[in-house]
Image (cartoon, rainbow, N blue to C red; front, top):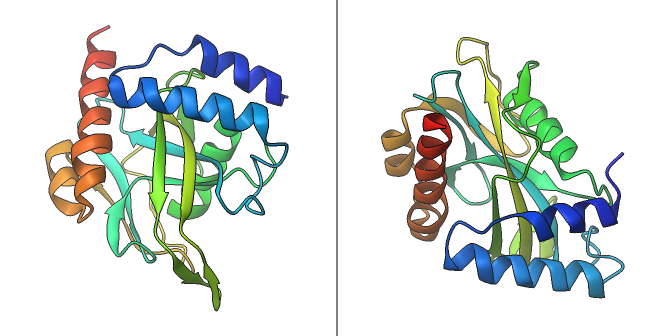
Length: 193
């Protein structure tokens, strides 16, 4: 069981990859420490989320979903909804969003950190104001031969792409330039270790 303090300790130990992660690490730690409801969507300013950068065994493919709200191919993940074990959240979200049963962490350590802006949108018939997702990302591995399926209320496509294709498929420039390109670079470095 990963407690709030355990997660804080993990984030404190995490070595930022770049200036974006350095700034976002500070923001995330400050937000968790100062907000009792940082892990709940009821905090309408910012709340914790977990994402998964899902790769196949030889790291030649990345699993993406076509996200209905963002109208773009994107990584997988979701809200903490009160859970402080964000690796468990990331694993659960991959299984739910892609319909796969076998997915495992390459490492239980944090793979990256991001503060992500979410534009106002309608979800389940209700307007959700613009807010921040304070995000912890994990590197996960799955079998690209396993059958996938969509989660109709969230996505309308699930597919494996080469890292280069993944960058081209996403229509969100900030994610392509700042997040996915970073994750691809980090995955290549992880593979060489």
